[in-house]
Amino acid sequence: MPNPRASALRQSPIRAMTQRCRELGGVNMGQGICDTPPPRLLLDAVPTALAAGHNTYSRYDGVAPLREALTDKLAAYNGLHYDPETEVLVTLGSTGAFAAVLGAHFEAGDALLLLEPYYGYHRNLAELAGLELRCVAIEGADGALDLAALEAAAAGARGIVVNSPNNPSGRILSPAELDAIAAVCARHDLLCIADEIYEYFLYDGRAHHSMATRPGMRERTFTLGGYSKTYSITGWRIGYCAAPAALAAPVGLVADLYTACAPTPLQHAVAAAIRDLPPDYYEELARSHQAQRDQFCAALKQAGLPPRVPQGAYYVLADVAALGCTTAAAAAQTLLEQAGIAAIPGSAFYTQGRGEHLLRFCFGKTQADLDRACERLAQWARAGS
Image (cartoon, rainbow, N blue to C red):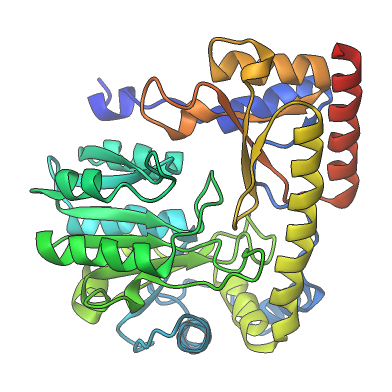
């Protein structure tokens, strides 16, 4: 018999909607697959790494050039200072880092706080580890983080997950909100898993603020990131975890057992890109995605599906009550069949009974696909008027 916790897992609706979209020939605005071209400098570094003989296992915590590049980047961009020998780990994607943190520092029955809406893999991996999940709305009735609910949920908990910019909402927690979370962590001695993989996707002049920079947080925070989104290389699986040495060491041991190492030649290529890509690469990344956000949100609004305009990342939640469906899954199926556009049911990112009036769309697409999706929305809206 399989592990009962594994038996309770369900396939992500992201995968199911992607497959159905293929069958119907629709435009996939559901999966954050990153189909824009990676930077040429990065691609050119792969054959160089292969020719140099970087084709065997790396050290379990990553090759030295990448750990050093990450250390420099964390200092310059995030304001965080770590030792590349003991405090920075290269992992099989940021999801691999998350799984290793849970395996190293949490036991079955421990309580973990998730800010809702949450990334589905965070919830599923926590459930697979046998953790007790406590979900707290990222926005209360006044639009701000529900600090009273967070304080109540923190009692007796082991840790909290902070995902900002947030997938699926695009919400960015303000410095004041991060400081409030830090105070809760200190009062309840919580470990903090800060998933910051969308750190470069910032709109309307916003800046990124890392959780570990807040008062008292460095010693209790695992900063997770990766280059799947930033460089459009979701299939490469290059992520990282940065934490104080005492916290990082057991994470590295667990990651070694799970995956041995991330792909060695690809580690070297990513190190070269971090080192050599100019700052304007990241600035253009934010500018271009903000333009795509504005284009797609306008199309949603004109089609009668009001968007919650995101502050960061490249997802948008839209209110689809106008479709008249009782569930988000039914709404996603209706939109795919009628308009030829795939989206993800909002219920995938909320506790049961919530998110049924929402769909999540990914606008981080090629311009041709984004234009096609906007035109299909317009055609669908005209046909229904």
